[in-house]
Length: 480
Length: 123
Image 1 (cartoon, chains in turn cyan, orange):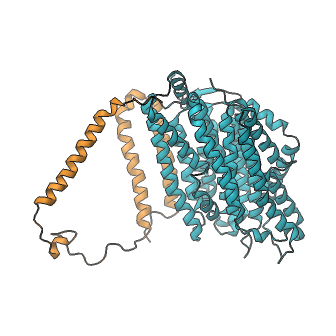
Image 2 (image 1 turned 90 degrees about the vertical axis):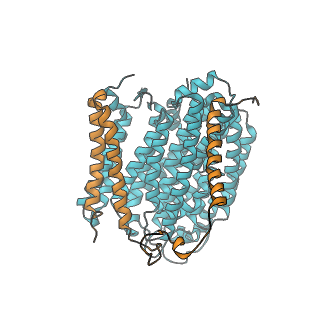
Image 3 (image 1 turned 180 degrees about the vertical axis):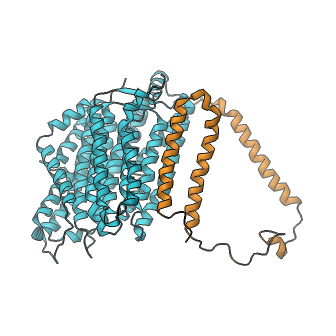
């Protein structure tokens, strides 16, 4: 395959985002300090333009740039997810950054660049591209985690994330290099054909598979590679935590599935037991440790670990149903988790930090609307009908049952019941206790818009999930 | 899994690694056995025949060094990339030119940004 300029059309959305991010940095130089939200709206505009581009390319299937970049409906679905997460994050960020006095234009540039990184990841046709996208994403996130420069917790989060993240990237690269040594290629499709034809007769393959699980396990925060999650989530500025817990996780899962189903599909009997162990450990640890947390950001961090455990079931099950349930789950998880963090962001105003669960005491008496919204997200995260969280979990567990792993589904359901305890504790605190003081919420049109979108989406998809299910079914990863 | 797998292609690497380790450790061992030991003050200085150190080297120094160093590394890398690019330029053609212009344009944006934010000013 030779290069032709027409191939550039396939990466037009990525080009738009990158140029947008560069332009944003230049605009930042001329825009006065008090008007930085203009840059936020500009970034949302860029995301909408890129989203339109991806929409136009939705039905295209092509391998471009010598097989480095794959454009397929599966990738496009996840691109839509990261656009949505990026735009909602920007809407949630503006007021928060103003209050924390860290309203700098670079922030939006980093959101755009990390989004571009995730798009490269989900479209990667080659392990090298996976790594490239992952680094573009991670380096932006390291910086965003340390954005509250005056606060030591934020610096700690950034440093911890940087050191552990580089370490896990190195392990991932090591796994990739061993895989290259065995198969002589890093192209995912070529690896798939190679392992379908050649049996596993090489101990190095198991080592490299293990390294890949470590590398991806770190990025999706699966036990035992989750240690960084609570500290980084707690220390980062709340909108960054919201973004981090949603978009990179979804993109990492997308590429996790693509690598393991497409490249290593022939070795499924060997990696399935590893992932089952990791998934069960992740669900147990995430849910059990979340119970004792008093800081809501830490609680949501452990909850996001637990959700990574549920999502792993989708990869373990694999095939049409597994892929579909994973895609459905990640989209719904993105909506409900961004919403839950949105309410946490609302509480940050004046002297109020709004990061302890006790800060929610009596919120229902003072601000019923915010309390109801939080209630919906907590119900959804716990997986209680009629919210979207129920639909998402239902399909995942159904996939496990269909694949003959009933016990895995039972473990998942039991631990979901455990999770109800800590989610409903927030609800209990909001509704059953008397408020100790007054609430002064940091509402703004942008934050309200983001919360309205997520609330309506969570309720709508809970009652009528058919459109999203159809979208996921149309975009299932095709494995030759 | 078959247990008799032997990665034979890696055998030269193993032999090389063993020789390297034996050579390196052997040198250190022989040196420590043979060398005379006279420790006196001048001998223990960082630079035996250099300027006398007058304070501890571990002092905090300005962040600006890091910023300048980082910018230096970026443009250093750019120059390193330009060399191989120039060598193969004729065999790749227009595509290579466009790629390099894009690369430099992105760096230029960063440069303008850093300049305007005052990263290049010492005071």
